Structure formats: structure tokens, C-alpha cells
Amino acid sequence: MRKKIVIANWKMNHDFHETSFFLRNFLKILLEKKINHNKEIIIAPSFPFLHISNQILQGTTLKIAAQNIYQMDKGSYTGEVSASMLKSIGITKVILGHSERRELFFENNDILFKKIKIALKYGLDIIFCVGETSFERNRDQQFYIVKNQLKETIFHCTRDEIGFFYIAYEPIWAIGTGKNATYEQAQTMHKFIRSLFLEKYGESISNRIPILYGGSINNLNAGDFFLQKDIDGGLVGKSSLKIENFLKIIQS
Ligand code: PGA
Image (cartoon, rainbow, N blue to C red):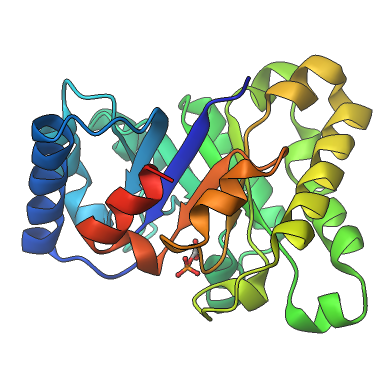
């Protein structure tokens, strides 16, 4: 059975004080109240706070992820952050392909594949996001879109490399809108994604690959998402920013 995974995507929200306050108090509550959640927990703070966040979580089972990397190894790319820099401060995971990066920063499948390659070169685990717009869903194109996002990126990877991935299905119309996908819509897409991995890489990889749902998950709906057969957890934005909400989600 696949372990459930909950990832907090803090986006450009918590500052230094909020980040360290959250992590220290979250840990304290987990330990003092002996919260039994049985999930893999990953938190994605902003770049400047990755190092301190990693230090705060040292010796715990919680992990830190970066929200992005640049697609080149190093050089004259003012303002960018490389996979090797993350590696040098002990970061082992990165989110790639988030729809906000695709839309606002024009990251297409070509760029994302370059980012995947460089992340793999440094041994980073990749939380890779896919999902359709409401325009595409209204035209019933969601399966075609998601298949293409995978085909042009991850599906160029070898079987061994697939072991570094978490997939996050995030319908764009559900992100930050308060309008989550139905459990059925999400489960149907997750089953479809798993079938694509089955076709391409065979049964053991398709049974193993974690597929998370993201898009307006909150403490009231998380449990029902996590009950679905092919949903292995959640990528949570807004509802991961407050300790009390996030605690409820990891216990769902
Ligand atoms: P949301 O964001 O939970 O605020 O909808 C999810 C995400 O963007 O990963």
C-alpha cells in the first residue's frame, strides 16, 4: 500500500518569521500532542528560508522542498537558483511544472524537461504538476492535455529516473479558487494518469508512483480525497499556511 503524502506549497507567502514560527510550533504540537498522522509531510517555503527550514526540521521525518529551480547548471543567470545550490544546503526535493510557473513565467514543456534533467542530475526528487484549464475541461480535453504534459516531459525519463517523481494533478480551475474538483473527477484523472504509467513503464512503476491531488484542498474535504483509490495525498496551498488547518489535513 502506498503511503499518503501531504505537501504544503507556501508559494510567495510566509516571511522569515512566519516560516520559522510555523515550523517550530508545528513540530512542537506534533511531538507534544503525539499526533498520529502516518503520512509523509513535505513543506515548500520560499528560497531564502530553505536553509533555516531544513535546519529546524533536522532529525525529524518532515522534509523541505524548493518551489522551483533554473534549468541551467550555473553561470550568468541573474536572480536564478540552481539545483546544485539547493543540493549544497541539503535540499532534496523540488516542485516543478506548477501552473503558476507555466502561466506567469511561461514555462513550457521544453523548459520543464530541461528542469527535470538538471534536477535529476543532482538527485533531487521532483514533485511534478500537471492539470488542465477550465476552458480545456469545458471542452472535455483534460485527458488529452494531461497526457501531453506527461508525454513531453517525464515520459522521456528512464525507468530508474521515474523513482524520483511525485505527480500532482492540479486542475488549474481548482487552484486557489475554493472550487475543488469533485472526488470523482479527481479519482478518474488519477486512474487515467496511473494507466499512462502502466502503458509506458509497466505494472510495478504504475503501482508505486505517488499521484497527489491539488486545488482547494482544505481540512473539510481532504479526508474524502485521501480515501480515493488512486489519490495518494495532496498538494495544499492556502490551507497549508495556518498550523491548525494543516494539522487537520495531515490527520485526515
Ligand atoms: P490551493 O493551491 O490549495 O490554494 O488551491 C494548491 C496549489 O497551487 O498547489
